[in-house]
Length: 133
Image (cartoon, rainbow, N blue to C red):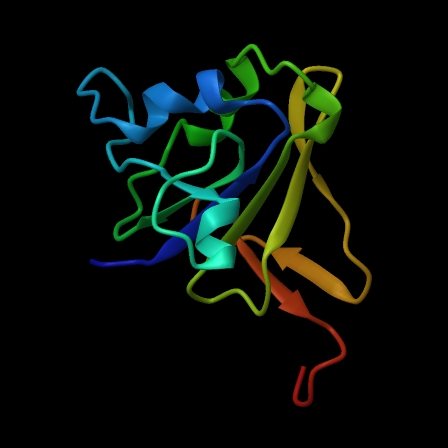
């Protein structure tokens, strides 16, 4: 069964840390690769920038088990800048995860509620202020 999940990682000065995650590695629990999103993508430039603060990936199956713990284990140069945004296909919006004491923890967003759902790794994030909730 296909399930789509998008993950965005934002972090300062993390090019070296994230570089291995942009290449295939059969030893990882999850196999898709992140794509760099540098400032030239926003400016429309053709050549990559030296600095990158964002990486994106889309998982097409429920096969990203271990990603959050892998991200926790990385030697982030500025751990306080790490933000991980996760949106499963049934989520109303992205959930925000940040490093606290070396662990990724979900940051509660106003007017949202996360509920368990067996087809997802983190459950479903719903907006409580949308019509019909």
